[in-house]
Image 1 (cartoon, one colour):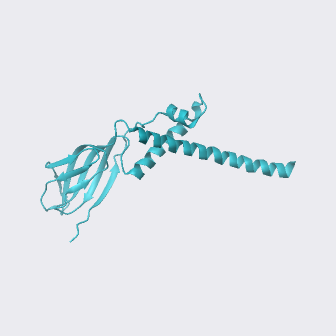
Image 2: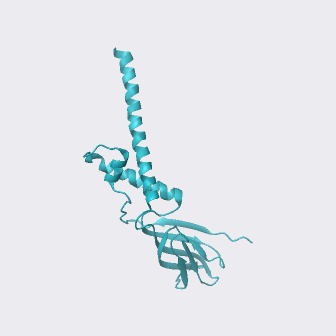
Image 3: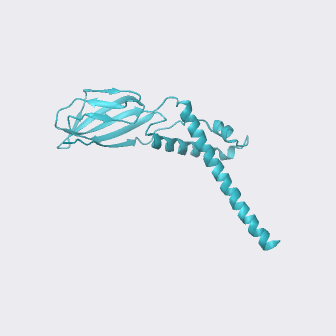
Length: 178
């Protein structure tokens, strides 16, 4: 008999996220002209999008924040995989077959890349709800570089698109009017 585990992880809403790179750092990296503060919001969204894309691809939390994972498993497979790098487990709740929630106090976890919670419960528990913190306090340099590269690619692509559109419009104008 093969045991399966289904997990659903979601970020807790309403958390303030401090991005791992400042807007001025990205401006300098992409070659953005100095003192052009009118596009700070656009570049800020680009940083957020790049970080989010990396988190999805890597399966890791880059910015430290809280998550909730709901795991539907059958004992004795009481190991719950969480989003790395795990920093702290805030609570573990078990749910029995009748839908009753039971606070689990007998558990331990491996922080950082292990990102597992080991729970010690009886066979009546069918699912778990784990609230935890994950992410870096200061993102590693290679992740910061990847975010800047993604921002630069987006910036250059948007610039190329504008130039391409202008080129087509100028060609059309040239043919029609000159």
